[in-house]
Structures are given as C-alpha cells and as structure tokens.
Amino acid sequence: MSPEIERAYELLEVTPDVSDKEMRSAWRKLVRRYHPDLAKNDPEEASLRMADINAAFDALAYHRSKIEAEEEAKVSSAPSKKPRRSSKTRPNSQTYTKRETPEEPQAEPEAPPKPETKWDAEEQTLVNAASSLFEETRRKLSAAARRPLFSVCH
Image: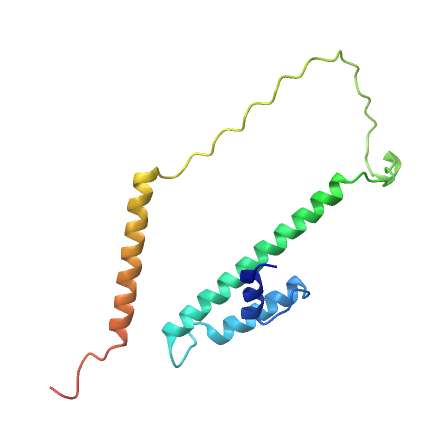
C-alpha cells in the first residue's frame, strides 16, 4: 500500500478492512467536527483540515473502486461454469433463432477518436495563471477579514 493511501486511512481514522459504509460514516463524523462554518476557534485551519479530509476520502474511494474493478476483471476473464438459465425461468421470454449468414471478413476496428481538449497549451497556461491569482486574492481577503477594522490605539 502506498504511503499516500496509508496517510489517507490515518486522516479518516479508519483501517483498510472497514466497509465503505463505515468509511463514509467516519468521514461524515470528521466533517461535522472540522467544517469551517462550524469552527469556533480558527476557520482557516478548519478549512485546511477539511480539504485534507475530503482529499483523503476521495483518494480512498478511488483506490477502492480501482481495486474492485481489477478484481472484477480477474473474475470475468476466468472461465465461468455458471449454468445458463432456461427461457422458462424468465417471464415473457420469447425464443429467437439465429439466422445463418455467410461469414464476412471483419474489418479492423478503427482507432477511437481522440477526446477534444477544453483548452490548448497556451490557453491552459492562462487558466492556471488566473486560478493561482484568484487563490492568492482569496487568501488575502480572508486574512484581511480577520483583522479588526478599528484599532484601539491611534
């Protein structure tokens, strides 16, 4: 297990063998404790802690879904010996017969189309710059909001 995943389990205060339901319950408990709107002492610290908790939960959810997908791929690639259900067990089923058609040579599958990107490299640079400027301004305004407007000493 990678160190990031181990740290995520530590942040959520759970072990790797807990169920998804228990993991979500632990996440919700931490959200109630560290939500910035409910923090009485330091909302900025609570906001940072909340971001870590959410990132940990997302990382674990992705990690677990990836593991499940790998396990399903292993199971589906193994030959199954499940008995086929007869059409009598399904309600309103109809029996279809396959028509015999001469075999046609199959064409090679086409390469999947490349997904269109939202921005090209130059536009992405501008978006990143605007995003960092926005975050810097947000931090400055947040710090300014905590300072008192009037000083007792002139």
